[in-house]
Amino acid sequence: MSANVEFNITAFDQASSVFDIVSSSATACFTTVTTGAYEAADNVSTASTQITTATESRSGGFTKNAMAMNMAAMSAAGLIMSISNIENAEVTLDLAYVTLEKNQTAVTLAQQAYNKAVLDYGANSRQASDAAAKLKNA
Image (cartoon, rainbow, N blue to C red):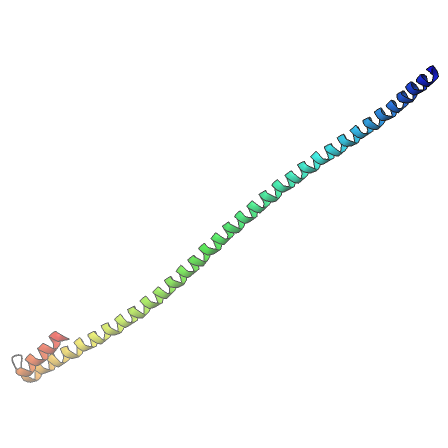
C-alpha cells in the first residue's frame, strides 16, 4: 500500500505541475488577448475621435462656405439692383433734359413772339399783352 500511496502522490505531483504550466500559459494567453483588446479599443476610440473631429471641421467648413456663397449671392443681387437703379436714374435724367429743352424752346419762342408783337403792334397792344401772358405761362 505504501507503494500505491507513493505512486498516487507522484502522479498527483506530476499532474499538478502540468496544470500549473497550462494555467500559466492560459493566464499569459488571456493577458495577451486582454492587452490586445484594450489596444484595439483605444485605437477604435482614437479613430472615432478623429472621425468626429474631421466631420465637425468638414461640416463647419461647409457651413462657412455656404454662408460665404450666400453673402456673395446677396452682394451680386445688390449690385444688380444698383446697376438697375443707375439705369433708371439715367432714363429719368434724360427725360428731365428733354423736358428742360422743350421748356427752353417754349420760352424762347414765347419771347420771340412777344418781341415781334411789341415791335409790330406796340407795347400796350392787345397782341403784346397776349404774347406777354403766353411768355409768362411758358
